[in-house]
Length: 95
Image 1: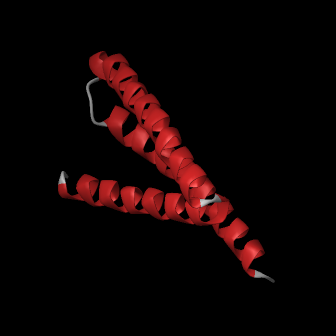
Image 2 (image 1 turned 90 degrees about the horizontal axis):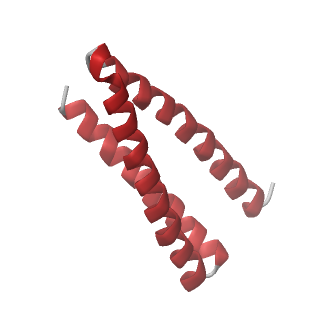
């Protein structure tokens, strides 16, 4: 197995993990509000998720363009994982 195969597999697993995190965070958010406010909570979460996606695509796209595909993708993945860790830590401290 070469380095390219290893990087591809780790990025694929990271994408799968992010999908699991999104589901859990949505469930936790909607479970923490009254049923009468769940629509507002869901719309707010969706708005922030959309905004984060737009900013993430712009930031990571500029990294790819500025650093080259391989180095930019490695940096973008490291930033994404770092942000996930920070958000998980913030979530644990707010309980």
